[in-house]
Image (cartoon, rainbow, N blue to C red; front, side):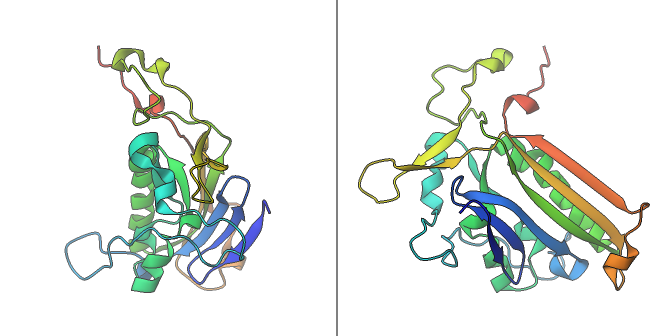
Length: 226
């Protein structure tokens, strides 16, 4: 099934058993959903990555160890981030399900992607409410964390190998028989409204919409200083 709809209390997603990633994840963000941007108050922090038992019986459920981040070099990249679901411990835990993850380079995940997530929280704290949808696109990313890279020269970063997938052993028999597709980029679309009621009626041609498409590569964030 390449388009399995999963409606969770905290967000909604379309799951793809061919890529073993979500096609998209969508949620609503308001101030009370978020964590504190300063030192006051309490938030639930990070959770534990878990296989999603809501997938139908017989479907493979990706685990945290399948990403083999230390050898492959791609992080478990949240679509709906932890900072957006801090209103309860259960909500925080929900975003650490592996159906909410795609393989992201550290330069993508901890770069523009995380910076924009933080900006979304700031908008929510400033009296906005946001409708967010995001997901992976295409296949093939690059990272310096992969053991497939035998040589790396920061001034000639184009020699990085493009990685299309992360092979996994679904039957625990020592045979790689499936794969998590590594996206070429991650995209994000955000609708920003003032806080209020009857949101659909308040969307007009003047409403603010922001779209991002972030390359899932190391090279995209290399700056030549020499």
